[in-house]
Length: 318
Image 1: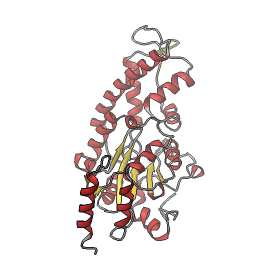
Image 2: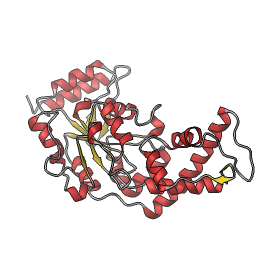
Image 3: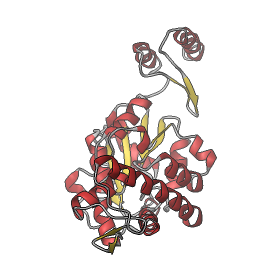
Image 4: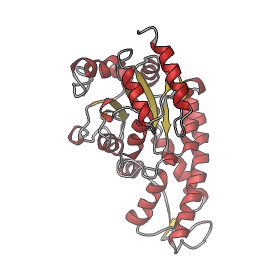
């Protein structure tokens, strides 16, 4: 019966593809079933004897795949300077300490600027040698949109010059990509234009195209710490949230992962190392995947043998 299963699946898929609303796509794992049709669930169940239920490993980008937060800060400040932003005749500039607060409080670049002008300074800036500060919500949005567009261009230039993957990330990703029972994805609140550049430089086109899912800030209506980006990833992969493990670097990302009902490993950076991640539900934290020697089996091995709530990264986590 097992030898006949691929043929039976092919026949079933051919029939399902004739039904409106059912779509099949191909990736490195072969055929993936559309999630919008009840027949997909039945078909997946019929093949459970041939393959156990899959898991998912989902990577944040900034701070996880690559330490980009300082590059983001430099790009924002360069954009602010080009626009000659000033509040009470003082230039707008984000310090390292202040940007650390922003990245652990607010998800998304535009949201960071709105937070800064509305919450921190309580005022929007003048720009371009005396152009008045915006006075309407639409004018505020227009200024932030233009700043973000210029910041993204400056950021891509910095990425091309300085981007390097964090130690151990590519090795773990390659191990996951080679495992037929693990789906791999990237979920980042940054814009598609910015993240695509980062992934092309750090992962390479071939590795990036093998990803099973890539969801970016442009793809969702609410950004981290809202869990929507991870909920969406699980839905697209057709995998239960409790079979997904997220790798994050900040409280904002951790809250998003736990809000989606997923396990979460934090690879902290110099700007986030003092945060109390465990009090917020973090399952394990390490300074770097490489220095801790994290392997795929350390993550999913215990979940496979001892249950989905098993301790992960035992012996290597902080």
